[in-house]
Length: 278
Image (cartoon, rainbow, N blue to C red; front, side):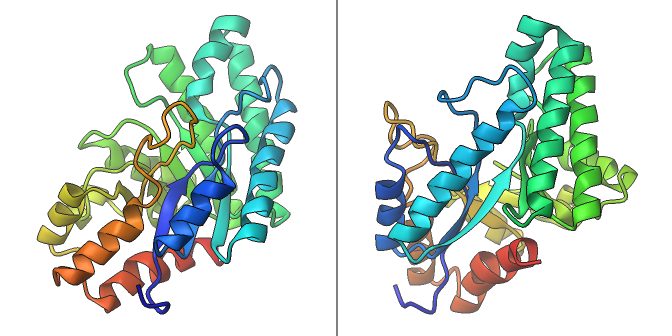
């Protein structure tokens, strides 16, 4: 692929026990030019109190440094308390304490964004499956604090949540309540909801499947980002998608004429730059 063509994956994880640097080298060799590195809970750090997030986010920064040293990739970092953590924390400490721990994790993430060590809060949000009402309410309170910080810091939030037809509307309303522009909300693992009536201003970040891309393009929109949600799990090396998926799909859609170089520049450069180079 020509060097002038950007190929950006908006959601990649690295793990100390995974392929990490070898995986992102493979992404670069396939034509990748940049990605968003999103923190996840690491088994190396057990979250029992808010300050544990300092060590957890520190692993993300360390992995980013190694990847930058080994490649020429643009790497943008998102940190935040993973929303599904509320369940084991609530089971162990009670919901009130679990919410307090995750709020502290959000506070620490916001401080790191403010210091320029990360450029987005994520992935934050709520569990992507049905949970009791009190868990959902607490999750939304934590998310609302993240959106308030995003407004203050002028940074995006990358959302982990359910993916129903009304999800983007819900996220848009929450953002407005926090005085955050809905366009600063990036819906991770979004279905091909790309029209104004579907997104309500939220930015979709879609798994880079042929089906999703075709459906989005069929609606006449190039307002989306692509992602793999590569997990870097040594036991499941291609979960959720192989790390080369976005370069492969970009090449495919350029070759079949469904995307032009201008389209790819918009999806893989103009849109990510708007969010991560602020």
